[in-house]
Image 1 (cartoon, rainbow, N blue to C red):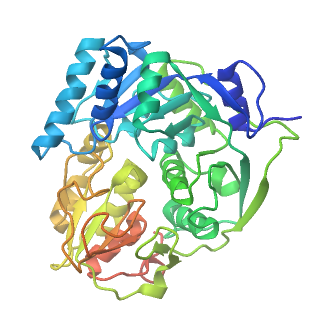
Image 2: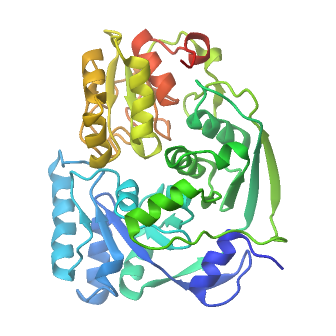
Length: 421
């Protein structure tokens, strides 16, 4: 019987063939903590091992992206705990507050490879499935155990194949494709499933678009997602890692729980309305809603290509005087490229604020949170009640829709206003 991608990856790390539903012990390639949740891992590990040694300091990474830099004493203390642990354990892969979103930073530094298993303290760890890595978020005890043993217990997820048929053109983007996927699947449609994406549009998605789609598999309760590895992305990974890249592909005859076909022919710009990511509509259905703030960034849409798409809309224009507009590059590498390519100048001349690389307005712990009854359009991945402000309303959209909304002062359909030049 053929194997799916997730069965191959877990089986390879368990040293035996596995099938969906099996429970096995498997070796891991990288364990990651961040300044949110990470300190609890350190404290639990130290208590359980009497401040013993980690199994392999070269296979542990620490990232600071929740508050970069810390703005409250508690977060500063959390980061200090992680820094002290790194020094004591000889962990060299500590990415400081200037680096940006952890998953993106790990990718840039060549630490994420197809077929690897990565665990971490972030619910969107699974966005690394964009390059064929089985990455998953876990709780404090699991990560502490990984630090000690270098292996963990896994249940092999069933696999679902999602095939996108048809295509679309600008101003629809990968985020609109993503929101359509979330709409079709619903909040629990991928519950503990491995999703394998197929289709012509998937084959042609750049890394930035794959990261967008992979990051929101979480919002359908999915465990991980995988894409056919393109030559361009393989070349990127080889350059960053210095290693020959071997893609992991499913076998003929692999068993899937089901196949889902999603027609995206002529896809229109989408928007997720309050207060759930699967409450998705065409942007034209909610045009005219006045907004107080626009956020462009996050692990979902903080890549250079995302910022560039927003800058193209905002170039030579002014942000509406009522709309606070915040732009946050995912990483320092993205920020530097955006600076050199003139994107900062475009944003700032338009009246937007460009902030330090990091997660930014993903949670209420960041500068720029909303007041009661305020409305925001965000390129992030979640719009739950209270996520970035008690009593506020958050819409999720693409960088194109968000940038246009910032200019108009109200939700505006790019399909009506914009055309590709």
